[in-house]
Amino acid sequence: MTIHDQFAKSLLSEFLEPYGRAVTNLEVSNEPRFVDLYFEPTQVTGYAHASERASGDLSHPRELGLLGQMARISCLIEPFRNPVDEKSIQSCLLKALMIRAKQQRQGSQTDPYLWILTPTASERILALFGAVGEQGMYHLPAGLNAAIVVIHQLPRTRETLWIRLLGREGFQKRAIEEVIGLPTGDPSRRRVLELLGNWKIMLDEKTEAEREEERELMMNLSPAYLKWKEETLNEGKEEGIQLGKQEGIQLGKQEGIQIGKLETVPILAELGLSVSDIAQRLDLPAQLVAEMLAKQNS
Image 1 (cartoon, rainbow, N blue to C red):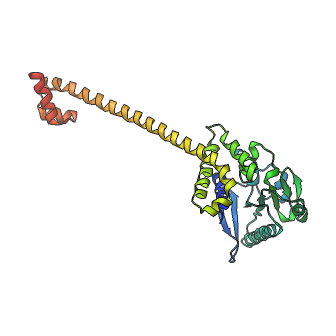
Image 2: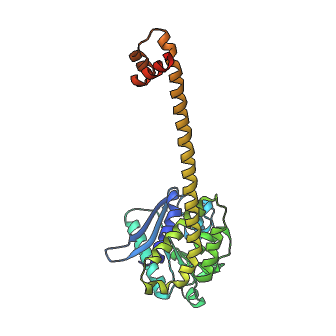
Image 3: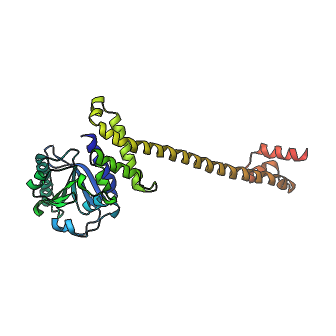
């Protein structure tokens, strides 16, 4: 498994898990075949054919934009780092058909939709599989229940941002810059910066030759890593200051209670209570009570 595969699976499952069951490396059969990500939403609005899925208004987590639309029903997601070729698409379709056949044998009515994510795709490849569409979304013939998402053709909007992070070179760099530019209070921004930072750390741990192969990727990730590191350190400092303040307040309260108890000691002594009785009533050390009374009488 490449580092890109790890990041893509982590990114997609991180966003989708709150809305259903996300399974990475789903085994297709007894043969060594695996789907990168299988997603099954918690709530499905009913069985839908490919044409309905492509245009219907099925419920989906809107904050995820295009990714949420893709995951509105059960689906298989296969992200590719390099431009997808003919054999790779055929392999994805075969795995999807095998999973559907297995589910049908088990009596399931789900018919997971296959999404193939690729940075670019030639017109020849799209035509070869009868994929039609625009702005990066190309659906295969309805009977295949599949689509090819050409990441570098997607419009640069917030709705497509999470998918565009899986692009390459300058296209990916711009998407990372958009993430950094999101409001600091955006919860998705923090989660993605952490994933990008971890991706950079994994690359740093590779050999020199492997890092050389991913030099441009490392350059793309560096700003996100530095921003994540800076904000993490600042958050740690703020938490430390806040914790210190809270401990100071608590200590002040405890000291105030202690002072109040000591001021009560002479009053109880005048009422005829012994040192041990006063100590027991006020939950104070007997020696402290005795010293307090001795100072008063001196």
